[in-house]
Length: 332
Ligand SMILES: Nc1ncnc2c1ncn2[C@@H]1O[C@H](COP(=O)(O)OP(=O)(O)O)[C@@H](O)[C@H]1O
Ligand SMILES: [Mg+2]
Image 1: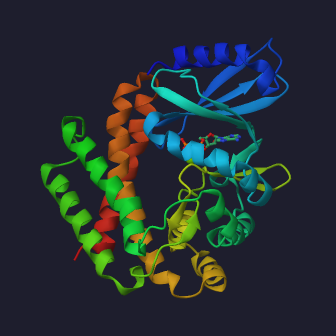
Image 2: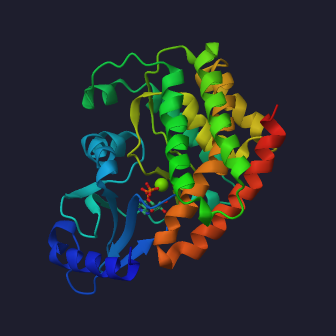
């Protein structure tokens, strides 16, 4: 990946398509947005100096999620504070990224940069609860009924991801001089154990039919100057999900903080007490994600010279923080 060259390609494409983007052809600028969570997507801020747009590009394997978003975009903008879709991109603008979408640019800060996130969290929780039982979405993304329980939804979200990460990590383990061979073996054992635990647990046996955003972390909630919130990054939405996934991802930074019991009680009010058992397993998976998934990001960053140092530093720090914490909390 050559980011400078990619920015130029996006600039040229924007100039050639300025009319459909509602932009003025002169003065076009395109800027890559660094997102530490990996490189399967690329994001750009494009502007003519007056109007700003957001361009999201994806590799072939992630395009289905963006295409699903197209079908839902009007409903999501009208009901869930999702940015308005401007147009699709079916041309491969930058190498390897064959599909994309352009949205209104939200002038806001991520939730992680807000000094008092709690009032926003409360509103987002309510919105998510509404989403989880939204009948209209199921009708828009018509899909075959999957006979699929909460354990399968958990496996699909976390276990599959860990297994893919472990393949990437093992293939390039020489890059990870701070991870021992014993640790790699422990990853395999732990992922298998977690999968078994969840598949046998009574609270995961019900059919999974919650509509979930699936990645509502604090980078995917933006807060604008009016203190209004926006939910972005809808490409992982599924209609066969577990509401516990969304609550756990959103509340993860507050887990065990002074605000945790307050937030937990909000969730109980919205979704009932039974969900808490599953949320606890999701928190465990989230911490394991901070141990394992960041190592795959570390390896992937090797091929992106401009972002390598920044991405690898962050990934290593997260891993070294999360690993002893996980052992302390969960090792038998
Ligand atoms: N419509 C938007 N307006 C402004 N910024 C956006 C918009 N969409 C995304 N972003 C910024 O780009 C980043 C990456 O976009 P996102 O859709 O979350 O991609 P990814 O799937 O790679 O996480 C976000 O964290 C946010 O900072
Ligand atoms: Mg995101």
